[in-house]
Length: 77
Image (cartoon, rainbow, N blue to C red; front, side):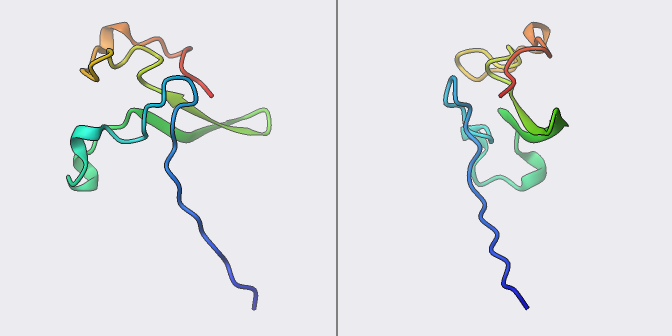
């Protein structure tokens, strides 16, 4: 039987460098963590897409939530 190797790596935004999980939430239980990057959530045109919630405006430069500024068409990579 072949061995399977699973490699888990952080998903970082290539534009702003935001990590997948909000830095203030490190050490919290998984259900309490906020996401800055929705990693590999959408499959379209033979590609898995991720969305940076910082680049899309859901968070401001200080990583405070600003949902009124969120543009669902921005932040995709």
